[in-house]
Length: 224
Image 1 (spheres, rainbow, N blue to C red):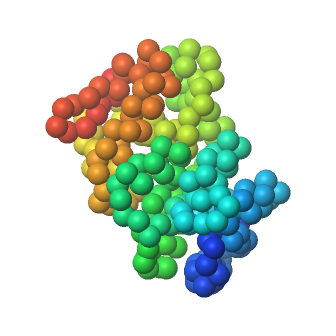
Image 2: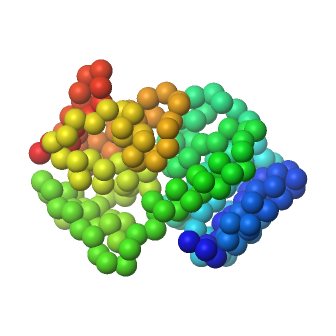
Image 3: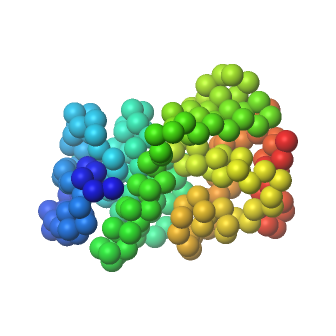
């Protein structure tokens, strides 16, 4: 995954330099923005950005506002950096479509590891991968989902969650197992992160949302 381009957005030049140096050392290309408005402009003119690392507290547009604008154009993975550890703020980010949340101060090595994990999940092979279950069709390579042959719009994380459900049909999945496999790291936040994504996914699937069964006190099971 060398030479992939990452956009680093932070109003502190010292923080941008710290993140940039570690990313460059690990083979990534880096472009920088000092505020949310600049980040949106740069993203619009750089179509090959593979991932965004976004600070929350910034002038002009904060991280949430910038992420919302970018989500209107793209499902590019976004890692949010924040000095806050409030679960409400984290849920807000996930609802927008943020893929990862890292609280400052953080280890640059851990950040680079998270970047690698997110990119690994977002990059698919060139071979087409398709799944069809109960009127739901997923085209992994094209990153598209059809319900009764009608294209529906899913966020990056909703797409990953649905894919995990489909390949584990009939299997009871705990919230912890879903977090570890879909988010790909041990998540120590509130399990409502999963519940929020499942609620939105069910709504977008329409009557097919009933396939996602709740297992009280444990998690979920996808069953047609």
